[in-house]
Amino acid sequence: QKEVEQNSGPLSVPEGAIASLNCTYSDRGSQSFFWYRQYSGKSPELIMSIYSNGDKEDGRFTAQLNKASQYVSLLIRDSQPSDSATYLCAVKGQNFVFGPGTRLSVLP
Amino acid sequence: GAVVSQHPSRVICKSGTSVKIECRSLDFQATTMFWYRQFPKQSLMLMATSNEGSKATYEQGVEKDKFLINHASLTLSTLTVTSAHPEDSSFYICSALKGVFYNEQFFGPGTRLTVL
Image (cartoon, rainbow over all chains, first blue to last red; front, side, top):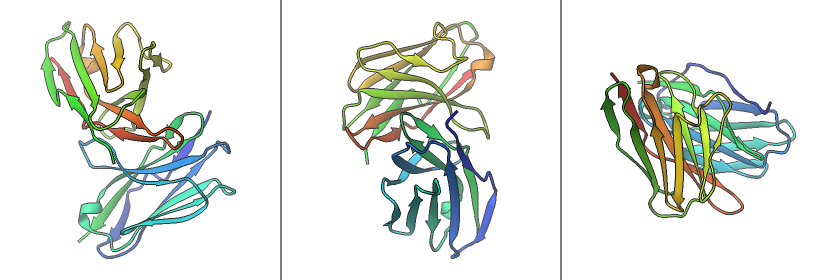
């Protein structure tokens, strides 16, 4: 059973702080890694894709991948209340596998 | 990014009726689309993988005769919930796979189904 694990949260951070979201996966053959944001009552929205070890930055978001440790993370700098959502980690080996999501709450 | 649409966004129907949900990739072709169901405060649950021109692959526990999937073109997949019952009430979300080597999955806005 290929698994993707995330801390369910909620993770609460003050406005302006850095939010750190973590994800581990079991399938060593995984090649593609994604972070989705899902607001309550809405569908998931792709915010980052990462395919090689290291960091990938896009605006306030940085994805970090460590394939040896089977670990992928998402950092959100200068967190805003509008970042409050559930963040889903997804991993693709032979198939896509989604984690259960981490609920982030950014407090004004 | 990429745009995936779903129609209708919301539907209310009587128990025993059938409901069809359409999923379209608007600015790219998708040989593979996925159908998910999500109950309130729960994780996404993959129902089936829809491949253009072939039969859908259903996840374990999903009744293929109840949830009919048709992927007739590279931009359209449909999910028909047949003889709907109140327990089928849920948020149904489709997604489409974009890319050849590095695939990314883009989601439609979802369809909220309420069966009375």
